[in-house]
Amino acid sequence: MTKTKSLTISAMFVALCVVLPIALHSVANAGQILLPMHLPVLLCGMACGWPYGLACGILGPLLSSLFTGMPPMAILPSMICELAAYGFVTGLLSRKINTGLKILDIYIPLLCAMIAGRLFFGLLNALIFRAGSYTFSIWLTASFVTSLPGIIIQLVFVPVIIYILRKAKLITYPA
Image (cartoon, rainbow, N blue to C red; front, side, top):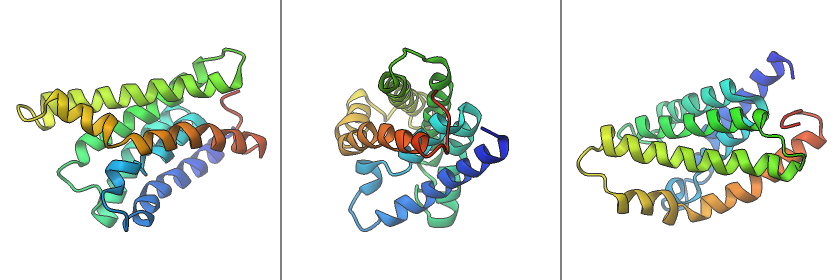
């Protein structure tokens, strides 16, 4: 994929990080439940590679916060770190994992990124952003219980969208 094509697709995913939360704003706590910014970042990393996924994970929440106030500034730093981890890990692993089974070549990077991002988010909150007030039960609830619908959406839609983008020859990775 050319650099121009990667930049264009990445810009589309960054824009989705701003638009999807707006579209879901009418649903109470949609950001925490449906994780609308996670989907474009995971897709960007997988479709364009780790540098673009990392950039999308940083720029998406930053621009969304500046333009719409979502996420609020209080949680923006930890969200940027979490989403940057998602984009980086999916981008890196989608180029390194080659099992010969296309479905596994999508799910392994996706699952690894989802776990790594949540662990990174929890560690940063516990040690830096909310030190002293962030507990294991808060992390478990926020990362897995409340966000279960969003996790299911990611597990269903990321492989389908990657398959469609590949079929349309808009992306060539994962191979």
